[in-house]
Length: 336
Image 1 (cartoon, rainbow, N blue to C red):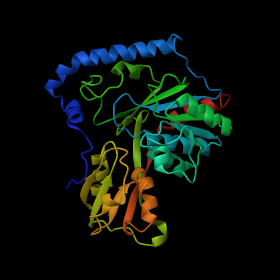
Image 2: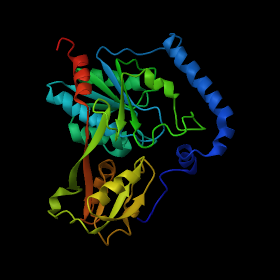
Image 3: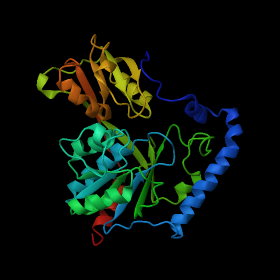
Image 4: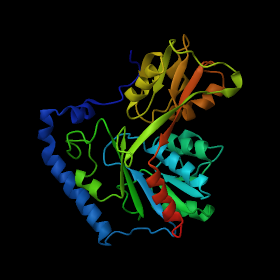
């Protein structure tokens, strides 16, 4: 594989997961970080700082590590499972990747762009049609959602450490391969909170795990054309393609493409990268396959004819433990 664009992981992140000895020099800063975050959490729990309690159940899908662990596909899978049970869930999100001039709270709709609300909320809305409101202030997002929609339950995409929002159920995701890195908190390690926090959540999901009660896997649903009206056939396995990813752990995406039989020239961009047409200027010699999260940011300028027609994204779906879905359904339907 060849690389183009920004490196997706800075040297510090690579050091967290390689056990670099020099990170011990940052332990004093880590202890200060632990003290400050611990005091903040205590202030919320003791009532010194206000917490918003929604009139419907709130489920947090988050993590204790920095970076992507596959939260958004899990949220999508939960929304779809709840909808299949006849429930009406809503979603709130922080909206990472939205433009600085974006106005919040923002109700995601058919006319929303990634610059208005972030790429992940837009993907959730486009995949599920569920009402979705974005705001850095999670209680404000929930209030705006409930003012507009009679939802049965609120799913919060990320926000495990956003203690201003009270919650009824917490799901923490871990990457089965990377785990907790060196198990240090920021800045000496990748943890937002100490590993002991995992004993307090209601359910821990392991991406790529083997235990059927805790494992989340990702089903490959095939290639989808970015502009479906062109009628082109997807590239055949064995072809050379450009792989484009602006996600937290792009290597897994490229590995998936290779497992499908493609010869991949990998182009890594930073997570939540704001794609522009120039990012694809030199990629016209072969088909381009991107992630679905990146596709929602590229579709508008693709429609303007700036990218050609050989543009595809890989659609994936999270497969969740059935027992977890049952627990979430029971929150919204206590008598079931």
